[in-house]
Length: 405
Ligand code: AMP
Image (tube, rainbow, N blue to C red; front, side, top):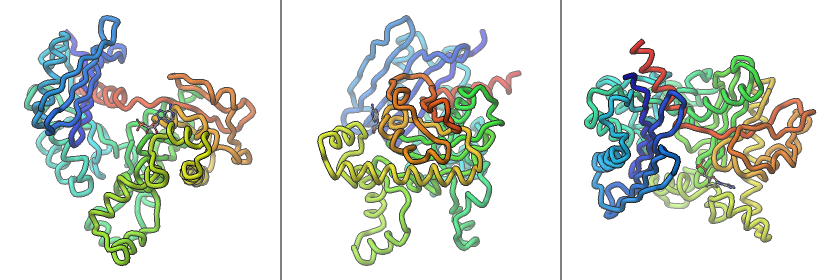
């Protein structure tokens, strides 16, 4: 029997998201999420998608660690006849946030690879440790199975030094591996490729600005299928205004808050990553709630929206200049896929650049990739739902199929 299933694991510090896919037709067999791992009551939500229905099952019980969580996931999958011991399982694909400069492609995990992912913990202290725990646990469950790491940073490793280097003292920067790595890479890769498809062209022939606007948000400039710039940097804090992150700021704000505000480095870290962005500006980070407040005349929410859009426009303009010629601007992720007012506001006034949004097309709700620009516009504006799990599964399956070929 040919093994055609791939389990995708996205392990966070206290959560695991998973999907089991059948790569013959990229269909989902089951999806689920474990939250609050290590807390008194962990919660597992499992949805089998075989056999027509999509009836979810929920479990609330203590799961002390990722191993307990993954064992519970394995039990749920087994109950649906999709157990991890199945010979149909070809590989497990892991989302790994930081791959540094070394990992430019999906990689089969062995001891040396795991060591290198560990070596990167100082530049991704919030993410890589959880990813490592997920990998080790999955290895313990199925030691014989190929485990593949798909890195968030990989798509951005094609950035030229002019975009990737900060204007810092080179020796210091190199000693501490301080440079711009970028994140959300699987999404930028998937969406830029899909956008080319939507235009009926090969990825090599199109230049795309991808706007991944979720709770975390990043922009990228993609020339002929290769990333040439992206807005996140050493960490996901740089760039756009996000749900709870500030994005770009004068770095001296940090010295000021420390020296004059008396705040510790850890307090400033939490302020900029968790209490800034939209939530810092208006108390809400959900774009639906912000739009509702604006419609009700709320000035604070309106200003937060303006600041968000102003930054977004600056990046569209900057990446237009970086690319020289732009074929498409693609909106994706929670806000990008759903918030028509954000898409409209981001493009208003950019007609001279060939950018425009058609009001009627923009207001259509759909799960499909689609164009929302009028026919006369020189630059296509697209909404392209992202699918990071499918991209991880595709990359994982391609790698293990190649190895077995
Ligand atoms: P993500 O991180 O991609 O899951 O995106 C999550 C964000 O998407 C939420 O915080 C919301 O701000 C936004 N979002 C989701 N659905 C909608 C919607 N229908 N309209 C506006 N924003 C939405």
